[in-house]
Length: 187
Image (cartoon, rainbow, N blue to C red; front, side):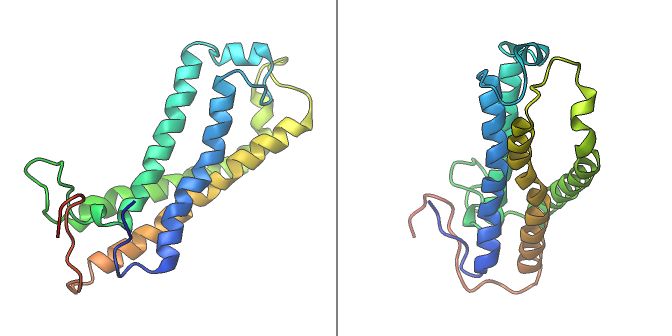
């Protein structure tokens, strides 16, 4: 595992790593659902989601995509987010333009925060839109699902904080005192 860039404060490094952790519970919940584990839906409910079948591939893919996108946040605190890795032909070793990371990260943070706000306002009606007989009656399932999805509310603010720090650090005009090397190269 590579280390953080030397001028990255501890809070930014922790926030970047936290994005991986806040996305994990919902991904595990979806994978369990895709495997047919009872996570609050009846067999009829799982069948409506296409589980088993295409729905399983969908929830697995969504979980992997979510973790992969959260993983990109680490690039805002790691050397591979400032210098192209050695395996990128034609670009290896060159500095990554700051806006190439800042703009997508900022757009992602804004989208995640907007989705979180929308999700908060609609959470109370979440069960009312599904057909009768598709959900289990026990409130335990709702508590487990809420516990798995609630951490996602932190993803947008965490990404925003790390993105602002990255932008301030990379756009400050000061040249860093360290020399970044492409990942895997020898100093």
